[in-house]
Image (spheres, rainbow, N blue to C red):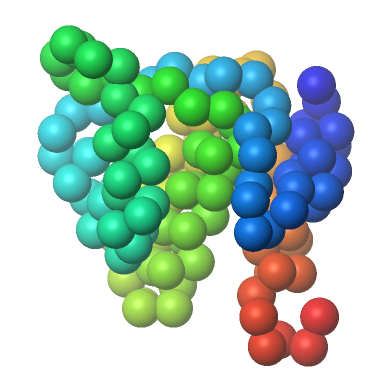
Length: 128
């Protein structure tokens, strides 16, 4: 799956019941990063999604999710950080995005541009 195919698949997901899209991505994270991301999400359901993706009995923690669910979390942290004027949250979201995309072999800059366009198009009440 290419970056463009992945982005097109994200656009086609049902926002009410977003299914899995893309490859499974496995990432390890230290506890401090997990806490920072959960704070940046600003959403108990998002933090719960990350917790449910944790591979049992791993230390440091290892998480396994499809590319789309990782992208959802990245975009949430970036968008929430932008709305709350928290550059540290934006940075956490971008760093996670780069880690996810590098693990798939995709170009992080190309996907970031595609996903930024997608996120801008989905913001409620912005006239799109």
